Length: 547
Image 1 (cartoon, one colour):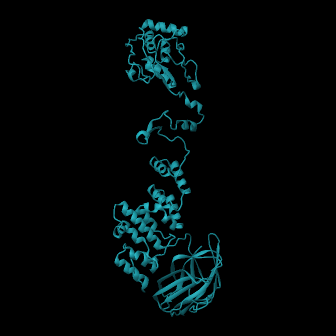
Image 2 (cartoon, rainbow, N blue to C red; image 1 turned 90 degrees about the vertical axis):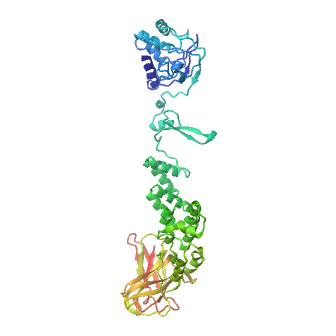
Image 3 (tube, rainbow, N blue to C red; image 1 turned 120 degrees about the vertical axis):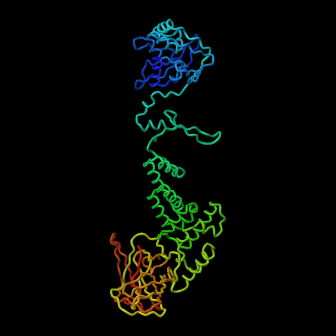
């Protein structure tokens, strides 16, 4: 009906702040929309006066303006049967008028008039006249013995007071206005009902350590790349050794390769601290294997084994298994084969892994044989050294010519050296046999000259092809060399006569191609038994290092 349409159209323009049900022989509170508010919307009013009709003076317009308590909601009035559950509830004794046939505009106006409370004697003359005309067409409503007054916070044209979209979204945040979803947070009596909207309110993000992972999950789930980037950037800035493993697990879970790479680099640089962190034992098996596979971990292998056993103990408990050696081996699975037992010293292996019960008897025996006999038997574990250094490997050669026949009788070849800047020596290049392909057993060392302390060593072997080339022999771990400090490079070979170098140089400089950085080696004679090696002639032609 036209009166309902009028009411609905007005409700789209504004929302009433106060609505009152009509009382018998008393005032009825109506909205006065004669004065326009911002952007043409009317301000709220509790005036009992209604404005004259503006569309030809018909009462239909007036009826559309004056709203009764039973019709404050345009979809719950007597015309659609919603009066019982109206936004403003009348008392049970209030009666709805019978429906009247509408044949002309006067009758329509009268029907509209019947949905409003009767105006008081203080109403304007035009409103009184219109009310009288309406009463002549349709009998008046029965008096309502009681009514209820309802007040709501006004939200009239709230957008008019907000100059930017950002301010409007900020207004909507945690607000019932236009809310299309609610969240129930908490339990029992402490539950809270929080209004929300199915869009992002702004591009401002406040992320903390407690919320970053759940926020990243949400950003991934709903495909919000900007929010995802904020979360990842926060994690990068807060990446530390004690949370590197936890963040690595999350980065792998959320498919964030850049963050995962940064976590791995942090673990490489701070391996011991990262392994000691509480979060290490919470990682999954795939993450553990991804770390153990790396050649750049900066920690001794025995400490990796101890950390792996600690993780296996926690994992067995998560799987509700007794932490026996058998169950620890079971949960470690393929990760056990990634621990490089041959890189340990025989003392480290005997005191730890050999007595742990995690390795089989056959594995323990083969590893002991690897440590003690030559030629060394094959073992099932990786014997490639780990190098915690990044960048390009460098080397220098101190001889300019190669000659034949250098013999060995158990005495070490030794040469003293120093450098002008901090480096890390990872191995030597040695000459091989003059009699064709041959295997050598060799022990290499770097000794601090003043204290006679062995800083690094490896008891290993190498195979040569009979040429005058040099053959790499590597330390188990990089050996730090400080500037202007004297060290002794030592190699004790067992095997047939070999090639040797001659026309040696006292100073050899290496210049990095990319940066132009120069590393200068100075070689000197090492007093004592040195098997004849000197600055001019002998073994140990190459030093392999990182800057």
